[in-house]
Length: 88
View 1: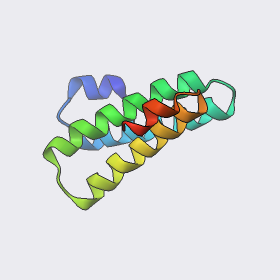
View 2: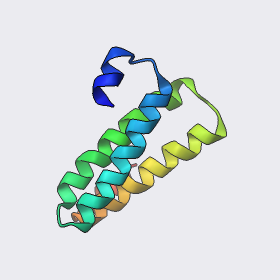
View 3: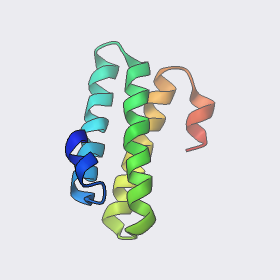
View 4: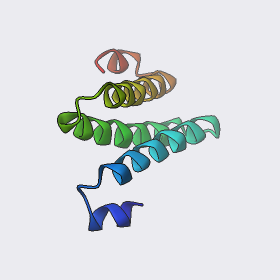
């Protein structure tokens, strides 16, 4: 998907799919003992959703952005960075 995105960076569908994949991988990494790796994946998802939200003001996009922040914050707490999670 990342290679496909590189050929068509404006494709919001691919970007959404990549964000969703990153969120899922973040949870898998957390539950398999790599919460720091999970945080990295959650950051990728949040970054993509922020970029999409800059041009897509729909409620669905707002929900996806909020969901990515929730995952990101949860994983920050899991690695002991609770204060950082409050800033999301």
